[in-house]
Each structure stands twice: as structure tokens, then as C-alpha cells.
Length: 405
Length: 117
Image 1 (cartoon, each protein chain N blue to C red):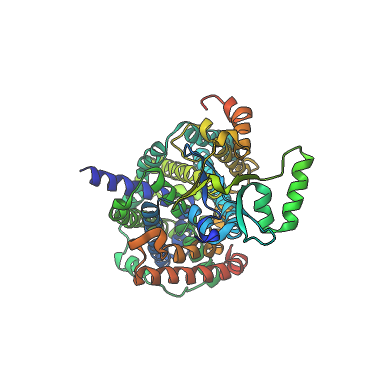
Image 2: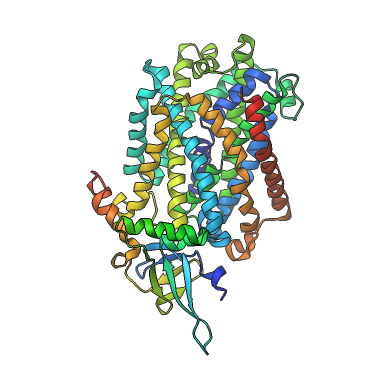
């Protein structure tokens, strides 16, 4: 019974991490502009992240180390410094987008412009991390994130043509606006294969004191959580295809998002959208803040744990405080959160090789993972993901210029 | 033992298992008519920066001196180390060494002054 509860909580937690402003916005844009045709990008991104999350959890459970620990040890400080700069900057951009997402939800709910919410939102994020434990953050906020299941209910209620939905799961060439089509596909992949997900997951495994016995549970949580998260993203895409596309709405502004749920649930749909957006982004903002602080502390060997008093880990506490302040700035000066989101997802896609290449080496290193090394199949998948990551790194910037819209 | 694989960049904990930092550098002493000897490990930002670029390391050291911060890295004699699988255990008390200077400064001047710390 305890194990079932652990798995259920783990899956819910993984969903909480998966669904954030990037996946909601890119899925909505995909549905609004290309109907069901880009479902394959969510399926592909979801499959990749299942493998990476499973491997990062297995690595932490067996070796007792987080990914940054091992990357610094095996690849040396110079590679770590490069990865730290790239991943730190991209994660900071994603954090800004998430804080912007919470602010937009508050703007939609209150009518007060989003930039006024930047400081209060940053303060609440900081307070939750300052006072909360890892369990509170991981499970509490993720349980609240179950509100996003309203997208799934909505997608069933609108009765989509399921045959076309299924056909969308197979890649196809765009009927129009090729550059835009591929740019959205790349952004969806950037939103799905977020490095912060597997870095945070590996730190979480250490915080939760996972041991070798958790390898099986880890597999179920990774597959269940990420599949469930992808399903919600697909539901957002279906709603956008059924409700926004016929109205000619292309999600160029956040104010169009409530139309994903209002036609289905009436005025309640508006509040469900506000709640879903706010909670999903808030949860993601907490996780990304911690992930950057973890990356810093683990890479430099500082004391770190969300379960300790801030006084006992002053550098770690100082790090997340500065990260929140920096992440809040774009919203405070009024940068459009949707632009930030799309740009940060593209930046994530462009920098994926930096954080994914080490997997191939670490997951085959007997001194870390012993008998739990990757099988030939897992290695083939990682090599494919690395190849995909390199393609994304090359095509993202040209697509940003020609299809960023 | 292979120094780079088994020691460099590893986590350093003190005798009470408190995290101090990582092995940022290894000092090997080369004397006449004697084999090279591993003398110390180093923990410090100037050592790290020197690994990126010697010029950068010097520049950071100059900048630290300008702000009255000790730029020399903290050295732990090899004899005080126990090399484990996951960590290097140093037979010292972390809080009494310069390795935690910044940690203690932040604790006293910044974090400790915030309610609820």
C-alpha cells in the first residue's frame, strides 16, 4: 500500500513538473494554427523525456549522486562551467517565463496589469522555498496542479474527431507556413525535453533518499508521470484545435487562453483556466528556482538541501534568493510573458546537447551505476535523442528568425 | 589510484561530514633526486579560474586583493585526507577553515538577519 501511494504521489509530482507555461502555450499555438497535426511533437518530446527522467532517477538512486555531481567529477570543471553558464541562463529565462505566467493568471483574475504582480509572486515563491520542505514543495504544489486535468475533461467534452487526433500522432509535412510549423514543433520539443526536469528529478531522488531498491518505482513514476503530463498537453492542443482554430485565434496574447475552456465550462472555465495557469506556472517556478540553486550548490560542493534550515546552508539560500530576484525582473519591467515563453522554449531546444550528451557516458559507467547500466536499447534511444538535440540546436535559430512570428 | 579520476573535482567533506567544497586543484611537489609527491589539495575560486585560463585566474586574484579578499586557495595536506568512493574526507573542522569563509559571512551578515532563517 505504501509503495502504491509512493508511486501515485510520484506520478502526480512528475505531472506537476511537466506541465508549465511552455507546454501549455506551445500546445495551444500548435492546435490553433495547425489543428491536430503537431500532436506527434508532443508524443516525441514526451517519449524522450520519459527516458531521460528514468535514467536520471536510476543514476541518483544507484550512485547516490546527482547529475551535476557526476558531470563535474567525470567531465571536469571546464565542461561543468560551460554547462552551468548555458543551462543556468536558459533556466533563468524559463523561470522568468513561469513567473510571467503566474502574473498573467493573476492579471486575468483581477484585471490588474501583470507587471504589478511580479514582486508579490516572487515574494511568495521565495517564502515557500524559505519556509517549506522539499516534500511540501514537491507534493503539495503538485497535488494542487491536478486542477490541470480540466483540460483533459474539456478535450473529451468537445468530442474531437478521434481518427484525426490519432493521425496527428504520426509526423506529417505542413500544408502551409512551413517555417512556422517547424518552429512550433521545435518549441514543443524544447518545452517537453526541459533539462530542468531531469536535473530537478535527480536532486529530488537524493532529497527523498532513494536507494537501489527504488529503481523499479522510479521506472513506473517516470513513465506514468511524463505520459500523464504529455496527455494533458495533447488535451490543450485538442481544445485549441477545436475551439480557437475555427475562431481564427492564434494565441498571440495570453488573453486568448481562457477561450480554451470558456466554451466548454462557461464562466467556470475562465476560473479553471486562471487556476490551472497560475498553479502550473507557480509549481514550475518553484522547481526551476530550486534546480538552478541545486546546480550551483552541487557543482561547487556547497551544503544543499531544501530540508535544512536556511541558516545551515547560507550559500544555497542566498543563491535561490538571487535567482528569484533575477527571474522576476523581466515581468517587472513589462516584457511580454508569451514572447518570453516562446523564446525560452526555443533557447532550451537550441542548448539541449550540452545537458544530454553526458547521459551517454554516465549511464554506462560501472563505477556509478554498476549493474544498472543502460541496455543497448536505452543507449540507442539516448543516441537518437542526442542526434535530435543536435538537429534542434542547428535549426532553432534560423526557425526563430523565419518562423518565430 | 588515478588522481584526476579519483580525486580531482570530488566532493570534500570535513570529519563531521559537513560539505566544504570540491577538490579544485591538486598540488604535486617535484624535488631534486626524489619522485614527485602529492602534497596538498586546493579549494578556492582562483584555482578554479586558473583551470579555465591562467590569465583569468590572475585577474580574479588581483580583483580579490583589490577588495581585500584573500585570493590564495585553502590547502589541505594530503596526509589529512581519506579518499572514499563518493567523497574525500578531510580530517579538519570545516567551520574553522577558510573554505567556509563565505558561508559564514553570508550566514552572519545576510541570511541570519532574515526572520525565520
